[in-house]
Length: 352
Image 1 (cartoon, rainbow, N blue to C red):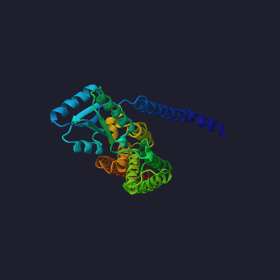
Image 2 (image 1 turned 90 degrees about the horizontal axis):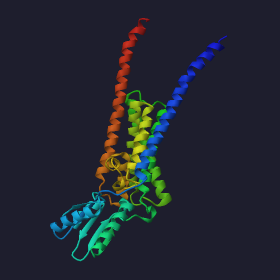
Image 3 (image 1 turned 180 degrees about the vertical axis):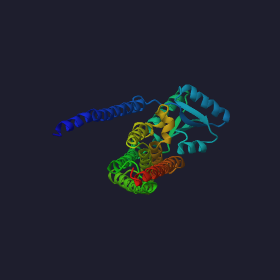
Image 4 (image 1 turned 45 degrees about the vertical axis):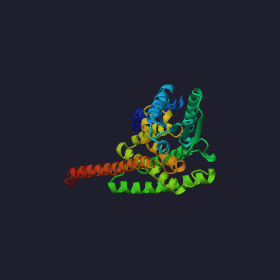
């Protein structure tokens, strides 16, 4: 007797179900499009532009003239600027403020590069300066002050380790949210989740770093620092994912993918150096968790701990803002639910 009503109920639910499935599939297609456009924008034709090079010479006048000639002759590839001494120029390369240092000498010139910052840009600059010096009949000595080890001949280890840690950070948070609820019901629950994510980040980093070192002999000599750095990278990602889920629910998962995968990976400067990235990737990349993570691991492994402050500051900032945001959103939700409860409780008490 109830069969017709059940059929009508099922039929009524079909359009709604189809709409939800269709909307989800459209969202996936849009993410695919953004994925393709973002990665192709970076990887389809990497072109060097405005590579910062520190220039020194016996006199300030020669240095300024050389810098102007380099900028003019390189067609926007070299962004030369004058520094006072060769020591200062070398320090800029070590601190990643410049990608090379060019010193004009009385009988020959010297070029300092750091292949660990990106073999492609080091090779590009070496070729350019060799050509320029050959045209002027001058000799050029090239020194690589941060060479890559045989175990990481292309300098991609920091990028892939960071990628894996970020993947674990947001996937762990997303799975935890799907298995429970994407929104913590109160500040205490949010804090417990954050503590749990911190422990997960430490475990994840330890396994990834030690496993990578044991299998491929990478990050040697800096294992403890790399584990600590990896923990911060993973936690910054996980905390950000938790905050976005607390704010937007399941839609926050899509935003996490856009932030860390669609934009963050190509902008990180790991697979393609910052100097080869188009705007806004080259400007925003160092400010992302991905970019700061790659820079931190790269500087630990290949630059003798130079320039750690900036990437550390970026990762700590992401972690603090995400932590505060997740707890604040939970506090707001808890207060709102309490307000609703106090409003409706008297009505139930009176039998209405």
